[in-house]
Image 1 (cartoon, rainbow, N blue to C red):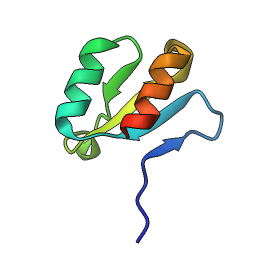
Image 2 (cartoon, rainbow, N blue to C red):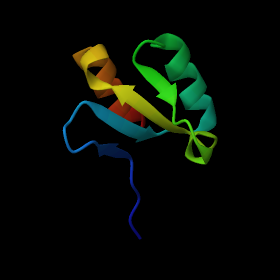
Image 3 (cartoon, rainbow, N blue to C red):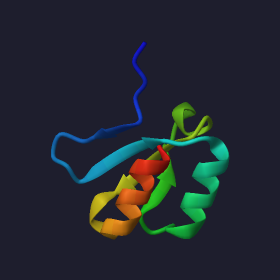
Image 4 (tube, rainbow, N blue to C red):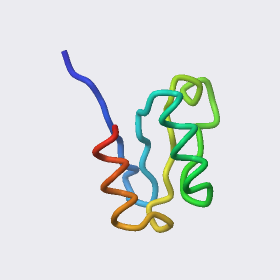
Length: 67
């Protein structure tokens, strides 16, 4: 079975991470300018949109490892 951890937009400016709701809440509090819950039903279980230009390399790496 496949599991998706992150998807990247075709033009590469955003990425969607699959966190738990608790991880999502924490990450969005730590980087509110870069991370937000997906604005539909996918956001409730932890899908989180990232603006890649607003993430530092360390934040991006941390999000990838957490997902």
